[in-house]
Length: 159
Image 1 (cartoon, helix red, strand yellow):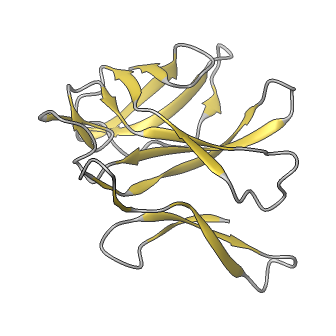
Image 2 (image 1 turned 135 degrees about the horizontal axis):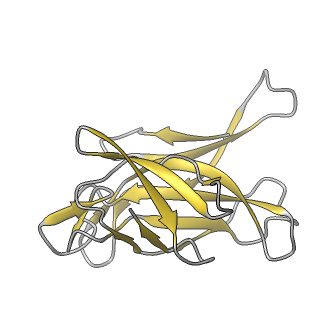
């Protein structure tokens, strides 16, 4: 179970496991909020998706709009990170999805590029759209916007 977890003012991606879905045990956060080595703060919220890996097996991944509005230098937000209006958020992938049953080790990648993003936030889980492309829905102004991945890395998206 992945959940937004905020033991302090910054949100982390918490991680819990259960053998019977009745009793749960918290384990190490998948992504922990806090200060980075370059002095910025990181906090995370977003969604968990299952996508097809290179071996054809489903792999969990986190699509995170992170940075507490402070992730990058700039003044136009995108997926809640400040930048040039098209960069923001990160993905995280388990380092060993098929041999680490508790998914204890995660690797971040980003920032992602969202063409047409300007002020979008809250990415949904990724789904396969009508044309076989990966898509997601995000808050976009007073409505929702649909973004489509432009490559298989899931790092580049367009409105």
